Structure formats: structure tokens, C-alpha cells
Amino acid sequence: MSAARPLKSVDYEVFGRVQGVCFRMYTEDEAKKIGVVGWVKNTSKGTVTGQVQGPEEKVNSMMSWLSKVGSPSSRIDRTNFSNEKTISKVEYSNFSIRY
Image (cartoon, rainbow, N blue to C red; front, side, top):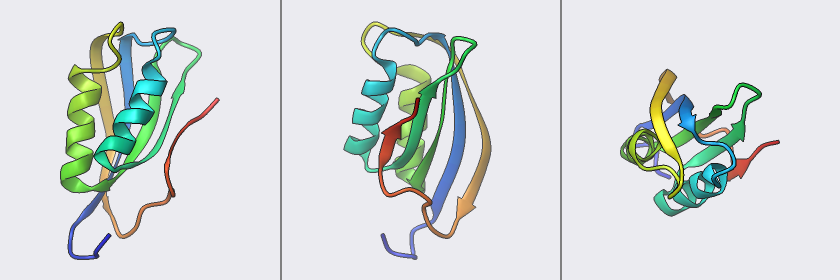
């Protein structure tokens, strides 16, 4: 990735029917397709949380996917994004599911 393109990092939490519907697997697939890095995991309160990093336009695409698309059998009620910031380099080598 060239230094000319701004890199962005954002944390997210997805609310709705997002556990037990392969949400994390689809999120990982979508992130790899788009070309962003970070992680995703289930929380104890029934949400899915994680972080996305990469070129700004790719992170924006992923944010849109996390807000509107999700896995085929999921239902996204809302997605909260926080700690959105410009970064000088990504902190992860890939996108992974955390347990």
C-alpha cells in the first residue's frame, strides 16, 4: 500500500440477529474481498464487534457492508462505529475471526 493513500481505522459493533448466522465468517470473507485488515468477534451480549483498517475508500465500503448487508440470514438493527481515525500504517497482516 502506498503512503499517498490515506489509511483509516475504525472500530465497530453490530446489533441485531448477528450471532449463530455465520456473520463472522461472511465478515471475514467480505473484508478479504474488499482488501481490508482487522478482526471480528462475538460479544457476550449478543453483538458482533471488531476493527477494520485499510485504505479509506475500502474501509468505507466495509462500513457500508457492516451497516446494510451482513450474512444472508442475519438481521442488522444498527451498527455503531467509533474511534474512526487516520493511521500511518495498518496494525494487522490480515482479517481474522477472534474467539
